[in-house]
Image 1 (cartoon, helix red, strand yellow):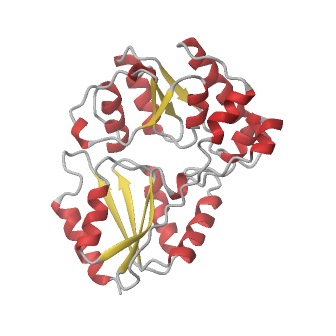
Image 2: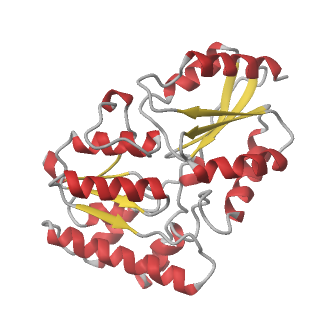
Length: 298
């Protein structure tokens, strides 16, 4: 059994957990908690998620923390963590563009660079069979669909990140007579990789990992982000929600820029809630807006 200090913390879905596990560490994808709201670094100019993730990591004793370049906020969090913490940290560069061989090659090189980083802190370079064992046991795709009572008001919830308190949002929707039929926050739905094809994996592990993660995850930050909108349309056809709730964070320009586009793609009511820099996940003003939104659904 691995010791607690063999944990490597991360948040970005483009960082394959089995890749970390194959090097002898325990991959822990953090869902930050508002209980870690007290800042351990300067808090100015950071979105709530990046700050909470940073504070969460500062209060643990991991082997390392992996940040990603998918947004400016997390890049800033990496700079702050590197300055204020003695824990090893790594910035994984995820290209925003994805439709060319250069971007795919860069992602492969980042996997190798991450591997060398893990070796430098005590990891062991895995064999192909060890890699296959790690990826073979993490081969289930999270669809994000939820069973529901079709007589209820059906709600889809989407957003890039999940907090430890996110269940409070689902509970509130149910208390108001609704059911969440599409849970696409954080570790579900639009951040899930494709299934690893083991036959192709043995021929070229890096190519298959790149295809399953970099070539498939329909994150909204991608350019072009046509995969996200294709995923969104398919998810709505499958789940048929009556309304869409978008969870966003203060200072998150990526989602803010796409909300009007999302509204044009679907023909149902849309509510955006913004999680701010507070100790309270669902503030009274947000609860009031959700109550009013639920009343509009038919």
